[in-house]
Length: 122
Length: 155
Image (cartoon, rainbow over all chains, first blue to last red; front, side, top):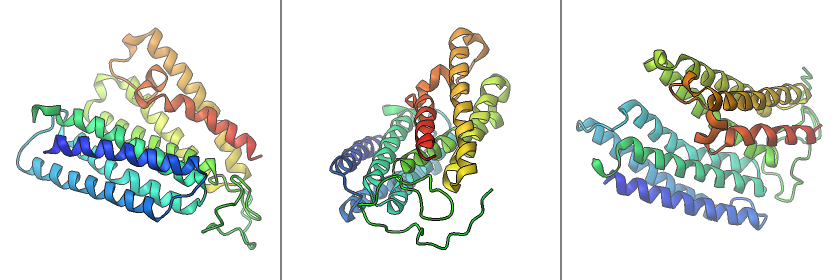
């Protein structure tokens, strides 16, 4: 369950990065549709956070430790909203580039989360 | 520090999308986070969170395993935090301070990166700057260079 969600979020984050990268390529700031995309990704990450915490509460243990696991979950949750807020202050293509970079950071965090949880072993 | 209160129309806000990237504010401090500077601040912010949380965790849980590596990560986190703060604050003094720190950061990445390659036995565990920041997609070595280019342009 968690592994599938982690993979899905990683793919969604890369898609968001490509989408905002395309907006930057066309010299456009982030628009409403981009923010809806960010919201979708953020809801997925929030679900991952909740499911992850439930898994911990049930007694499952991540391979590389619970503290690191929770830290990465929280970091993943913060990445895209923070970049989105920054892009509101910069209504040029650089706002789009920043959201794109934020989505790439999220994708990297998801890869790390996959390893921290222990891959398909759990 | 030039603490001029901005009375002109330099308020950050929903400026037109066509605003020239990197144009200094009409009054008060030079804004360093406009245009490409925003991306720079974002990446520095990510590095602050990454380096700080990593070094705090490692120093608290397993400092004896690789004290040198973890102390260097903590030092990197402090440098990143200071540069981020300078960029957000803006102004000539902050710009110069950030420029110096970017140079120090580059020197740190290059020396620690070389050090980890030449004397790997001194580092039982990785630092943020190990192998020139390979574990962080080489962002630690790219960031100070782009940072210095950006800060020079804002002069």
